[in-house]
Amino acid sequence: MSNSIYLEYNFKVTPVQPASDILIAELGEVQFESFVETEEGVQAYIKKEDWYPTILDDLQILTNPLFSIDYDYSEIEQENWNATWESNFNAIQVGQQCVVRAPFHEKPKVEYDIVIEPKMSFGTGHHETTYMMLQHLLDHDFVGKSVLDMGSGTGVLSILAAMKGAVAIDAIDIDNWCYLNAKENVERNNCNHINVYEGTADLLVDQKYDIIIANINRNILLEDIPTYVKCLNKGGFLFLSGFYKEDIPQISERCRMAGLKFEKNLEKNNWVAVKYEFYEYKGKSLGRITFGRGDC
Image (cartoon, rainbow, N blue to C red; front, side):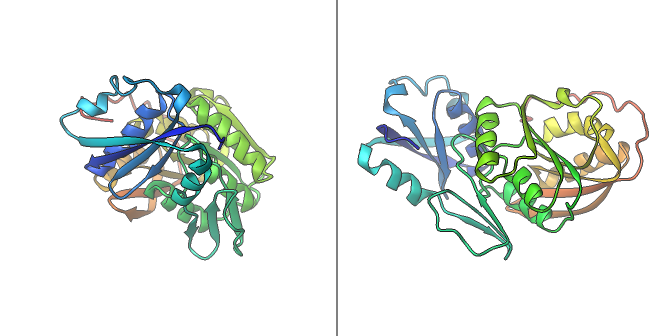
């Protein structure tokens, strides 16, 4: 983080999820640089030089009747910026083997020490979906495997896969900030065999992987599962997250139609992360899915 003067916004959000995720995404579009999720919502930071009085006027979530969002903001003095950021960003321990931390945290004595500078990217381990995906990956064998990480965010899942022995990894995210941040984090963790790309599932032409990881949202997953399966080697595994417990039947049916077998799921605060095994690609068109107005 730089030593520029920042403004700190404190948003109180009801319900906290999924409103906080939507709010973070919209704030990122208007130059907010970093975010800390709190029990009541989100703290968001923007450089004073990038701020203007009407900066929040076009945020659609603030006028959405499904959510209640209150906020205030204050200026953070230059000398206090780093201390404020560091005090709000805690290291995350996943089981006994893995810690996800920022560069300013003390180095822990664990097998997998992942150093992340998140900036505007999603995937620090604080969110339930990232945490559960890390749990899944810790329990899985990656030695000698090829891996695809869709919606890679900070690159944290790719980095853990690399540390666990994966030999070839492609990380893809549609967001330019995530793309740039993942490249930095890959270098920071000395994972030179992770290739980071900016784009969507359209990049997956004639690719094959042993393991595919996708932590995105329900609708994108439903649309892209057939593409993932075409890229998955027989006997391979697909790990999915970014959706709620009540979405599992629809996700699992889509996977079943594509030749995937449900193995297990993890659950935390109604978020889930699900593991599927590929046993047969049926080669049938699954068609396109029409989403309702309330889908996100």
